[in-house]
Each structure stands twice: as structure tokens, then as C-alpha cells.
Length: 572
Image 1 (tube, one colour):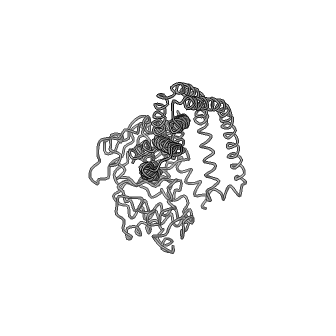
Image 2 (cartoon, helix red, strand yellow; image 1 turned 135 degrees about the vertical axis):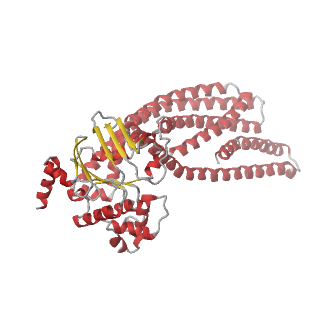
Image 3 (cartoon, helix red, strand yellow; image 1 turned 60 degrees about the horizontal axis):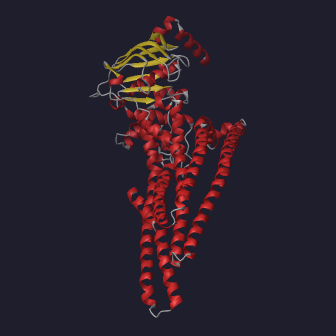
């Protein structure tokens, strides 16, 4: 569609000059008839009238086609550019997305995503204006050549002025990205009903609103200062434009008074001068807008072409076997941090073993899961899957073998209960029987069946006929997603934090009963959850300090025993 759009704009750019030329012919014909008189009125004007009708019809059809194409490009870009962004962020990976600079560029791209279409519109508009400008310049250069260099001098001055203030705006935008991100987060919190509960009760609403309004007032003030100075400079330049046009008009009238041109030619030259001056302004303003948008969209170029995605492995894991997992002297610290979270950790998990990992907050439990999912790469040592370095494995073949339920699990309020479960394995074709089995294992089938639409119930009150599950119900639905995936390796990171003790016991009975022959890794603070594991790993400051069965660890009377007794005392 873009070539059609460009061609249509170029054709339409000639309409002004064509109409001016026809008007000149009509004027001369009319002047001759008025001065000399004639009986051939029809013969004189019928060809011109037919020419006018033909040109109007032609340009009208081109304009209709142009409007259709431009609207379709706009509509498609609105959705497809977002799709492109989603795929790019997926390729970059979680570790890069948590880089502040990448986050800033993503923020700026999200802000400018709608302007990419406008950028195209401006670019094509400049091409069309340039064609019209050059055509008018050629006509004027042949008739009043003195005017052309004057406008090009004025063009250079405008360009210099605009460059100066564009850079100021660009630097302001670039240097305040983090503040803008904070303001956008505050705005989203102030418009989310889930966040408003606490904000209203604690007067936090006024606090966040105050922070947001303070940023708005400050940024508007800074932009106003630059825009006012820019406008003042442009007023002086506009004065030069007016003088240039006035001088050109003087030259045209002088040619008429000297009888060098006819009245019709006067009309044509005057319109050509007007088109030259107008398209001159259009070209300058278009270049200014294009330059302003270019420096902003440049961030998009960097996000898409300068940041390289993680290099994927080349080895495929074949077959349906449950692999052995080995952490060998693994060290890890998060990007932009020197603090080691994992320190010389070695751990072997046998196929089909049910492992529990416990430890205080910050001990490195969730970090181990992230490394195992290759969301991050180990900084030292190696992580082996069936003897192969995880970095050498084709990541998709590894993800097909694992099912993970994170502590900060996702909720999909815009989807139905069924869709919330089947998204756990989007490749598999779901049946209602499989969905219900997964919900039953997660102790969620009973309340889902009580929904007015059952499995087809939208899970958000923000949609027509929708309902909102409680926090505990959401967690059960997430666990059902985990059961539905039915992967050879299942990882649960604090999976029952929002669930009552009775439901938790039922769910873990199901984990140990239904998941046989598969590796299970459980991270939890609740000892009732982990005590039945084949082996319990105790982490402290990124190191394994104890391991064994529940009974073995109690006999050691170490850190595990102290934590267990402390929790047991609370229940007593």
C-alpha cells in the first residue's frame, strides 16, 4: 500500500499547478471574449470545461484512493507495530528487559509507537511537497529567477533555528525518561481498581497524585520555555518569508505592466508563486517535524537493531525422558549488581526426584528457578541438563519439558476460566475433560462450576458478565494451569501462599499422588508442604548448608530444625 500512497501523494501535489495553468487559460479566453466579442462561446469554452471536469474527476479518484490506503496503513500499523514490539522483547529475554537502559528505550518506543505512522505520513508529505516545490521553482526560475535564491536562504535560516531547538527538546525527552516512567506507573496505579483500595484507605491516592501532578507541572514548564524561545525565533523568520513573497509579487506585477505577460499568465505566475511559498513552508515544517520525530524514533532503531538477543543453543533435547539436572559450582549475580546471590553451589537432582528448597527470604531460592529456566545465565560454573550445558540447548526444546508456577503467577482477567488453564500448554488441543481434571487436582473445579457460565466465565468484573475470583481462587486456577501442563519437570515457587491449610494439604497430596515418574521442585516456607519431599535442600546466602529428608534434618538440629520448631510453635 505504501507505493500506492506515495504515488497518489505525488500526483495530488501537481493539482495546484495544473489548476493554476487551467485558470490562466480560462482567464485569457474570458478576457479575449470580453474585449473582442465572439459568437463561438461553446467552441471556445467547451474543451476547457471538459478538461476541468476530467482533471477534477481524475484528482478526485486519486484522492479517494489515497484516503483509503492511508487509513488502512494507519489501522494496520496500530496493531502490527505492537505485535512487532512483543516479538522483539521476547527475543531480548527477561535479563535484558530488566536493564534500566533497555527499559527506558522500551518506554520511549511505547510512547512513540503511534508516531511511526505519522512519521511515514510526514515523510511522504515532504516527498509530495518537494515535487510541487521543485516544479514551481522551475517555473519561477524560468520567469523570475531572482526570487528563487532568496527563498533558499530563508530555508537555510529556518533549518538552523529548528535544529537548535529540536536538540533541546530531544535532550529533555531523553534525560527525563526515568521520571516519565515513574509518572506513568503512578498514573496506572491511580486508574487501577485493584490498587485504589489501599491508596484510598491510606491517603496514598493524594500522595501519588501529588507526585504525578508535580512531574506534569515541571515537564510542561520546561517544554514551554523551549517552545516560547523557538516561536520567537520563528516569528522573525516568518517576517522574512512575507518580504520574500511580497518581492516576488512585485516582480510578477512589474512583468504585467511591461506587457511581458498576459492577464492569464499573471494568474498562473501568481498561483505558482503562492504554491512555491506555501510548499516552501510545508517542506520546512515537514523537515522540522520529521527531524523531531527521527530523534525520538531513533530509540526504536536502537532497541530493535543494537541490542542483541541471547544466543540460543543448537542442541535439541529429543524423546520424552526425564533428564538429570546438575548445578556445578554455580555462581550468579544479577545484571548491574556485584552482589553474588548464588555462591559455588553444586546440586544434583535425579530424574523423578521430588526436591524441596527452603531458606530465608533472599537466600537465592527463586534465583535458582530463574537459572533453571534460563531466564538468566550462570556467571560461573555450569548448569547441566543430562550432561549438556543448558546454554548449548535449544531453549524451546527445554521449555517443552518444564512447567513452572512462579510466586508472582499471572492472572488473565480478559480470558475465561478454561482459557486461563489451557494457556499453560497452548500447543496442546484442550478438551473440557482435561481442563476439569486439572481444576479438580488444584481444588478449583467446585467454585468454577458454580460460575454462571462455568468454564466459559470471563474472570474479571471489568468485562460484561464477568466475575472476579478471590486471591486464593486465582492461585488455585494458576495451579490448575500447572497440572494441565503435565511436563516431565514441574517447578512450584511458593505455590500456595494465598491458600488455606486444608486446601494446601489437598493440593500437595495430589502433587505427590498424581505426579509420578516426574521431577518436582518445590520452593516453600511452609514445612507442612516440604516434609514429604524425597530430599530437602536448605539454602542460606546462596549456599547449600543442609540437605536430607525431613527426619534426617530434624536429627541434625541445625537451621532447618530451628525454623521448623519456630513454625510448629506458632501452630501449637
